Length: 393
Image 1 (tube, rainbow, N blue to C red):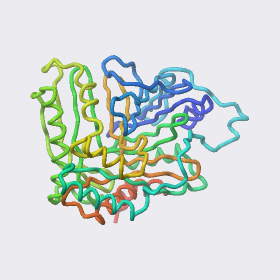
Image 2 (cartoon, helix red, strand yellow; image 1 turned 135 degrees about the vertical axis):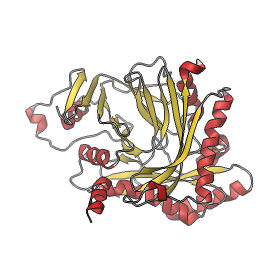
Image 3 (cartoon, rainbow, N blue to C red; image 1 turned 60 degrees about the vertical axis):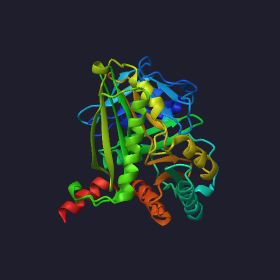
């Protein structure tokens, strides 16, 4: 079967669907849950069966996490063909195939929002800087939306394929859930990776545009970006201290590429057999989300500012998602560089980390840059293709 057939069969069953590819993975994965609605509740990674989870940004106790169980599971082979490993996919009849347009789930998102207006975003950044100067918090992440009309021939599967091709170093996903809508993204940020023998997390922050044909060793970072990334790293280490975990390896920071942008990244790894802490993945998931990279520091005061000033329901943006207990490993990613696909338009999401060194206009430009990386792919091009064209010239 091909991906279009798998997807269309699941939509015909009104099922929940997740399609994804992990960074630098040769395989892509398809999962369909035929329940009326996916299960919802706090996740215990040690004891949860294989599946795919999606969490909204606002999920303080973890009770809003959605779990997609495996009714249909398929992967790609070395030739890119889809092999069904579990379940019997619904196959459309000839009369159903006549409707060539690929369907997807919608939600009832309002038509207009103030969060996309530049004047509102600039004011929010200015208010955030003032709050930092008054000692309310050290950092806050301010987000906004951008609306893009869908082309007449828009195909959600074709869009996923282009995005997957354009972002080899990202976790690329397409998720469609009844009443919760359809989300697509390419995130550079791992939240947690855990198995029976290891745990891993990263701090990713700082953003700048960087030509695809330029070597990462040439990257230069200013003080604001370095400090912003250091805050995220300190946040992770504070969570380790909370549970008295001292045995971890820290690597970085180093520059990493995400499309035509780069970020600073530090990795943290724990040998679970050495520390005898098998439940660390679940414990750290609940401690880390939302990280200071998507919320701020201290967490509670930053959350209060976001709730009072953003005028935006982030929904799944800056939440987390990913496969759990697939081949014994759970990999969850922060849902960044993402968009929600509506009937006639896509809603793109972007945020910027605000510190005392922030310049409002530059923070607006950073969010525009983050949106543009998705728009470039959405409107027919791919970053990888442009990279090859650059190399030829």
